[in-house]
Image (tube, rainbow, N blue to C red; front, top):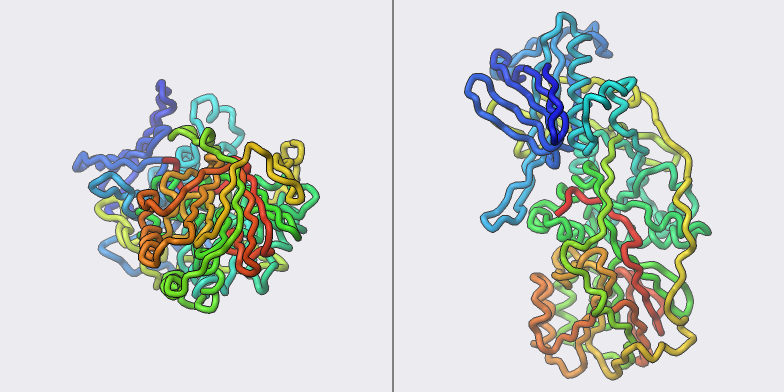
Length: 581
């Protein structure tokens, strides 16, 4: 092994062999930005970018020392001439490469598993130590840990270079959307968590409001993030549970993540859009979002504090009155159809167009528009161990990848062969902290004063600096991020933390054809080109309905019908994402 300290960081090289071709040697080079693999026979060089790597495992053949079934017969079957040797250890690098379209946009992710033999030492234990050392180096590169000769020398154990992390809390609503959320988690999310060594607690909700109660009462310090496997409604519960806590101001920025498994998946689509991964998200939304759990990068996102006549709430997505709010709520009876319910009900509602009388008071946010590149992002590389944890309120979900699961893009050439075969033949070597749960129960957070509303309460008139629109409206709808569902691109120019609620207004007098044109435009975001659509970027808004009945929605959930106001708080929340733009 050679180690060279260069200006850009440490460069470490070692020679191994390919798992599929044990007689072919390769040279692995680790730098701060990538892992490079050179085939010493063909001199072909393959680069694995650090941003693509989600995990690395030490592997061993079944029957090797330390295996639970050591006395069992050793495997004798061969596959394409490949046979594990008892003294060898193995390194498996999991990477998801984002393939680009001709226009440079991210089209889809391709999975690659790179497996190498470590057999230079005379004993299996020595080879395993060397494999574990290189596993740590790969994870340091993937997690952004700076490597140097000094840090390697000062570490009591090389594994200490990887920061330990608390488990994630995963909330699954099995009845969201078409009712496939639990299946989505088991078959498509769990393999990503396993490959990236993400410890997790799983709670499968059984009733409405359960997530809200959990967020309000549990010690959130047990976890590093809350992951929603559902639609946007479950995240709405979590945030409003947090807001009901006496110490809400200490936890409102608790990291969240969304894996789309519901009817409306607006925040998941908005996160992908913010990362430049929207085409990949549309191709495979679950995979694109799940990679955010593995990479654990954070983006700041806006939240809005909302007041009605009966309660105070928090929202992260939208505030609606009129057509879109009616479609959202009245289409609930078609929930089994998933996202298609919105399209079907929208067609029906256009034929029976309604109007609503009232006033819109707003504080313009034009001067708050953020230039591209000014987004406030927080990048905190993280790592934790892959183990499913049993808790009193959690449903335990196994972590082993089913052999029957179809996984495309396993890898080709010398780097990898058939991924399912490799994982059946080789067992992951458990690390010490995979044997027990390591919770850090401290809930200490940075202290800061409670957030106060900067606008008058509902029983007071709006300030003179606010503008007012009065009349009859077909639609009044404001959204914080770019998307309000997976296929509804309301605000192409919106950013997660621009501090603005983007308010769309369609007044009475718009024809059915024009409204239908607006609904069709939600798919590609070309709404500002429509002359009958007024768009107002605002920092605060107050809606005062005068029509006696209707729906007002916050993040797709019904709130009290009557006067309501919202104030945007810029960058108050945190959401996990797979990579930065």
